[in-house]
Image (tube, rainbow, N blue to C red; front, side, top):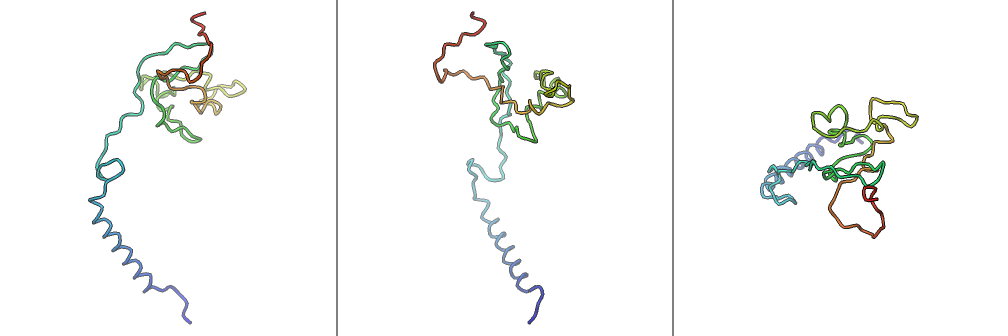
Length: 147
């Protein structure tokens, strides 16, 4: 009984594999993506942030500022926080974006850090995009500016 690599079988499988890809690529020209365009056709995508440059008054003391642009396409996870590409101290001036408060650079013990503290990493815990929408539930809240 022979032991070893069956090179003939591997060669035949490789040839069949490559010819199958060639056949698929010949048909790929007529394939349309789910977006309705050719697969290799460039598609314009709107920029993520379109600042409205409107500042919304806060309704109560210590209210986190509202975000004046859409954020659903932003990646914020354990490794990446796309909000910081504009709002971190190093980038805010160039991007003409508001900088983070110094409280975002302090740890739980109050020590100042050179980076955003882990307790402040997930921006959408406190900050939400502003929208012009009716309240989802009725309430009797009166903003401090109206008291």
